[in-house]
Amino acid sequence: MSELRRPRVGHIQFLNCLPIYWGLMRSGALIDVDLHKDTPDQLNAALVAGQLDIGPISLVEYLRHADELLLLPGLAVGSDGPVLSVNVVSTRPLAELDGAKVALGSTSRTGVLLAQMLLAERYGARPEYFRCPPELTQMLLEADAGVLIGDVALRALYEAPGQGLTVTDLGQDWRDWTGLPMVFAVWAVRRDFAAEHPGQVKEVHEAFLRSRDLCLAELDEVAAAAARWEPFDAATLANYFRALDFSLGDRQVAGLREFARRAAALGAVPALPEGGPEFFPV
Amino acid sequence: MSELRRPRVGHIQFLNCLPIYWGLMRSGALIDVDLHKDTPDQLNAALVAGQLDIGPISLVEYLRHADELLLLPGLAVGSDGPVLSVNVVSTRPLAELDGAKVALGSTSRTGVLLAQMLLAERYGARPEYFRCPPELTQMLLEADAGVLIGDVALRALYEAPGQGLTVTDLGQDWRDWTGLPMVFAVWAVRRDFAAEHPGQVKEVHEAFLRSRDLCLAELDEVAAAAARWEPFDAATLANYFRALDFSLGDRQVAGLREFARRAAALGAVPALPEGGPEFFPV
Image 1 (spheres, rainbow over the protein chains, first blue to last red):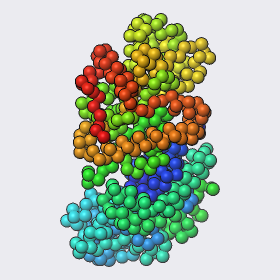
Image 2 (cartoon, one colour; image 1 turned 180 degrees about the vertical axis):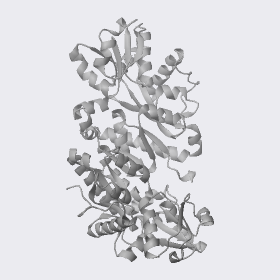
Image 3 (spheres, one colour; image 1 turned 120 degrees about the vertical axis):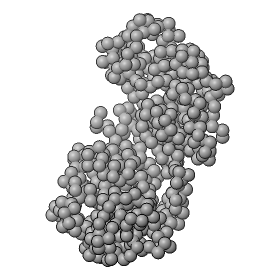
Image 4 (cartoon, each protein chain N blue to C red; image 1 turned 90 degrees about the vertical axis):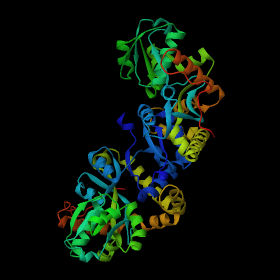
């Protein structure tokens, strides 16, 4: 009965994808998908391994597996300016971190690569990196700076300045440097699944776009609901959700290409094929 | 931040709980819970192990762990007459199965115990039981009857009579025998979680009740949506959903007690304490 199987769709169970989930609920789309909620790392691995058919994927992981995947048009998680939740917290300016120790408090591949890229190429700093639990105080006992991503980064944005620390928002820093939006994650479908079930992919894609649009129309309501459970108040959450850019238009694709070009030059990912990224045709 | 954690709530990803899921979606309640979708066996184990706080649990597993659990009032999966999806398919009448071989095509503890109870006590038949994949043709190559539960039982209900087989609906058979509804699964909360977070339990409980009521009001719509993915047409699904009894009123509690009493007499479960089952106070 494989032809009856609902598409296996991944969902990031983090704050930055809560608006998309809200929309999926409100639109009733969840009944038509087999939704797997997990961490970004697990979802990346599951999509690449073929355990999921469709899902969000870190930009870096997409670039490493672009030959197996097609992007869903119009949808991403990024920022066209401050992203609020991908930060370097440092005891001194980034340009003074050459040879210093920098703690990586996340396994987020795109965020960490972006931090390393900016430090090396924009600031000429080649620090010594080490992995570390995402706890700011502990990080800065051993390091001169820490890369924080997600909720802990969002908290640090509000708390670190009071501790005399410098917070650099890497979404903003990337735009200052390149003039382009940053794309942290995209939605992709496995090429084999798209070839066999183009109608299902079209429906899931449309459900995601509808979800995104629904949530943008109800963002204060989403923030108020999320504030019941998240360690942030509704205003902070609304501000955060508004900072995120869930679109993937021409400017975002240009930002994606620029990141891909620079990442490939560093040897971190294969080069994107000419004319890439390749999209699921709609 | 444990005080901020959403309640971990189980959901059975089978056809018989789809109406509840539909309601959870439509009511927007999913944003307030960390929903774990899994098979009944996995959810039973997770609730007993404390990996879930609230969830559906097979009646037999509830009876085995009643000292750790409180029932959520008003909510169950059962039937007051035919259940359509818990069947014995046999080559001859049940009373003639004494000493015969009977295949158990399910790990569902309540359904299997009900079949054994009815065969022994109502029909005086003590066959030899063995586990078997839930595939009717294969079962009946080796056995004189098979116990089928879930989707495969629902299919057999429509297909087996054409093959000259007898189908006994165990929901109906239980009611003919006892005059009472049968309860196959209940919703329970761990006692420790209920003591620490009564407000959250109250909200989840109310969300489930709202979901149940919403879905009953839109049952044809639920059936039409499900028919896109399930190997049954919308009319069959609507008929099935209408056969299910999602309530837990006085009659259902009496049926639960009667089953518990008989199961304890067989040594299958501990006796329910005097005045039991114990409910979460609302």
